Image (cartoon, rainbow, N blue to C red; front, side, top):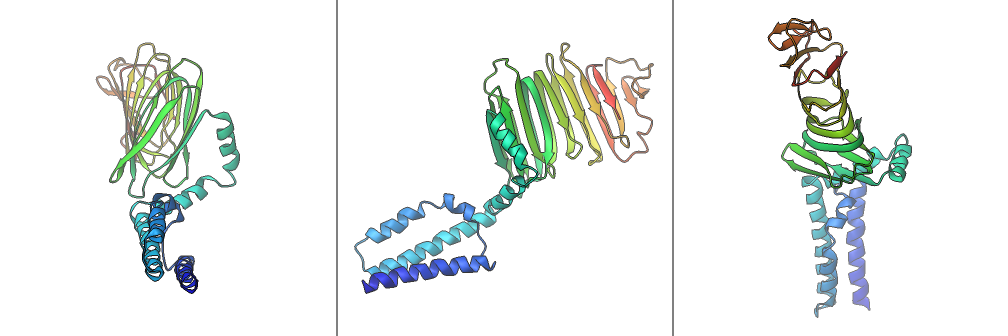
Amino acid sequence: MKKNGIVLGLILVVVGFIILLKSFGLLSFSWWTIWKVWPFVFIFIGIGILPIDKTWKGLLHIITIVACVSTMIYMSNNNDYSTWRERLRSFIDKQDLKELKDDILNSDQISYFGFSDSVTYVKVDAKFASGKYAFETKPYKKMLRFTFCGNSYSTSITEDKTIGFLSMYPKTWNNNESTGKISLFEDFGYKFHLQGEKSEVLLNAINLRIDTLEIIANEASIWQVTLSKLVPEIYVYINANPDAGSIVLTIPASSGYQFTTSVLSDTVQWNNLHPVETGTYRSDNFKETETRIFIQSNTRKVEMRQ
């Protein structure tokens, strides 16, 4: 009985000491990694079953606890689990609680993803069908949030060093009216490849650093895109089906832009652009501005606003 008390006392001392060191910031690990180290429970129980002296069991239990904490420290420092608490706090704040509640109550599908701290640039590949879909920016640290109602969507992320990859595709397409909202972390750099059919897509990128945007406008798709001036050069490629709807690009007034197409006459002024060569038009401030937007399109259904 005395030995049992010594063993239990040593274990409690070690656990208490570890928690104390963490509380004072002398030991760094995240409690969020506990779900990853659950196999240590079997090791702990197995040691208790072993037919060895209880003193040795106590020492092995202590070693197991230290090994578990060391594993959590390693995971926190190398796999970004330490930021999950910050992420949780960053998107569940007072101003977002109502929006989060509405998303949960009104959506068939809601997902949260997070990239590691090494990722600085994200490539987005998405296809939208039969509905209205909107991109928005949020200050959530490394977090992305998706809410869909109607068609079911497959969303996934992967990463390779500093580049993250985000894909969104409809799993079912029943032609019902769907809605979707995609919240993006505003501090990433972005490259977009977007497709739409029988859908309306709103991309408000005023706070996003997009350097490349490719739009494939299929049948009855409507696009409203607002670009930012956060990068010196933006390249926009538009491939529109003859049955596609309107495409509206809103460009910052301080940005110059160049429009290249094969369907416009180079002798006609169009949307405050003037021709510089066959099929190429430029805004008056193109040479003077620090931010330039290059647009290539195969359709004259593109409307540009400043």
